Length: 281
Image 1: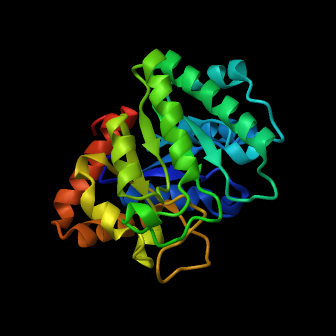
Image 2: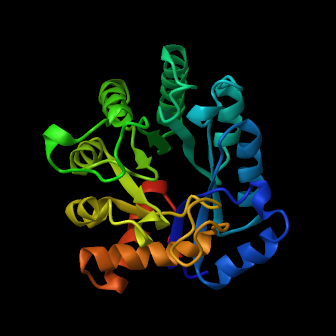
């Protein structure tokens, strides 16, 4: 298979695809789209790996989503067993999520942090990248101002950057991707300096909130993703998304940056291969 696109974050193992997953995965192959199927808890991580083992152009990431820490304790031994499989190319989806204040208190934040630290430890041990979820609290405006005095709340990004900065002292090989990036230029620059890429979804096809970030960061630090089944692109909004939409995401990144589409496509493909150690084919 001659690879052209990589959807760096999708959830093809979810029930949303029960009716047509085989046909959709076949279309991905026909259109030269590879996908990283991301787990959000132990069960979905097992399902992600099962799909990846079945299809050459699918890979898996295993982890516990921060919103799932209330219902599951991160069992590093169980996740290690999964992660030792060569088709598991990343650890996560892990991270911090302060979006729902009714559900997020200091105890929850502590659990999220402890789970994130355990993911970091496992990723460092196995020398695999992290896939990080980071969602600020509701006080954060959708429109990200570049004036530092009026940036609003970037609480999760500030906490994440501190955690990663401290972790790099003990685990210098820690690296990875911050998925569905909604921060500003300053946050992107700090994360890139720590060895992380920032990834954009089809939100950029109908919202202009992140154009400045996309224009400002190095092309070598950008990934494209869909977060399917969520956030379908313009023209399919409020419908189920799928990894084929990564083609539209890449096209929009090129348009926003004012750069040649083939150049951007090739660069984002190279970035995904480098971050996740994907084979060249």
